[in-house]
Amino acid sequence: MFSVTLMAMLGVASVTPAFPRIASALDIRPESVGLLVSAFTLPGAIFTPVLGVLADRFGRKTVLVPSLLLFGLAGASCAFARDFSLLVGLRLLQGVGGASLGAINVTLIGDLYTGNRRTTAMGYNSAVLSVGTAVYPAVGGALATVAWYWPFALPIAAVPVAFFVLVVLDSPAAPGADNLRSYLRHAADVIARGDVLVMFLAGLLTFVLIYGAYLTFLPFVLEQAFGATPLGIGAVFAVASVSTAFASFGLGRIAAAVGERRLVASGFVLYATAMVAMPHAATIWQQALIVMVFGAANGLSIPSILTLLSAAAPDRYRAAVMSVNGMLLRLGQTLGPLLAGAAYAAFGLDAPFHFSAALAAAMVLPLIWTVYRHGGGQR
Image (cartoon, rainbow, N blue to C red; front, top):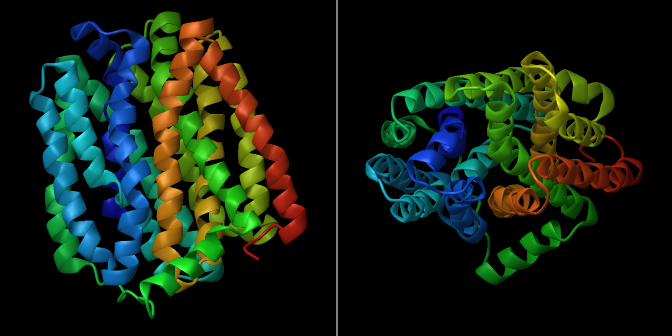
């Protein structure tokens, strides 16, 4: 499961430090380079729920293994593209392969663990993810200093992971359902719950923030304000991943004390604070501290949202519910660069960060509502 998690994050984190050089090499505007993120994430917004239903009906590995193979082969092909339109098209195909990865891995955690052990496992998974997001930008940035297209070769690692999953992973059998109509009706009942909808929205906005202002435009802030190289940009992103890992690794103990819902609300307060400050850092060290705050918000909110959604879904509908969440996360990844790019084009480089801070602050009130209506934890 951890190997799949590492592959799920590889598609974006390893290439964003190269964005300024990609824009220069292919002669495209900064707001257009975000299409490399949106093209990769768009298929997830379309196919993830369908793949979740298939995983519930026919088993997790039946969907997971072919997805990994397509992700790896299509992704590695991007390293050979020298035309921006072709590169975007290959990223779209890679996104089809990656559509189910981030949903099925957390579905498996929900299958195997319950209660606070589930929260702890989600936290560990998020910590592993953070290790990947710490390493990937640094590796991608280092490769991009050699040539802008080298980071795109990294997804080939998904091919051996696919065979590893096929042979080693002992996933539980899919619970299935009596018939498709009954299955869809009961899954829809879970999805339509008020507290579940709030967590879906929180997950969507989280990825709008991460993939919009943070991953797409922070590299330009770092380059323009501090003259950062791709390697330096990757190092700054790695700082956030370290703070995410620390917050996630202790999540089980923290959640046992205060509850997952309060952790999600706290995370969005930190998001708003960090986004307001990012474009105004006076030194690279101040920027690193702000990025650490952003990373801590990720570590508190993302695994807590996944835990609450997994707890809300019975076993036989869990992949569908988690895949709807995965669809929304992909939608957030797709919308984030587009919304942030529109803000940049209209008002300049500070605007994507201020817009993101407003979104994060607006999300705090619905999250507080869930705390008082349902309590702080998984109830």
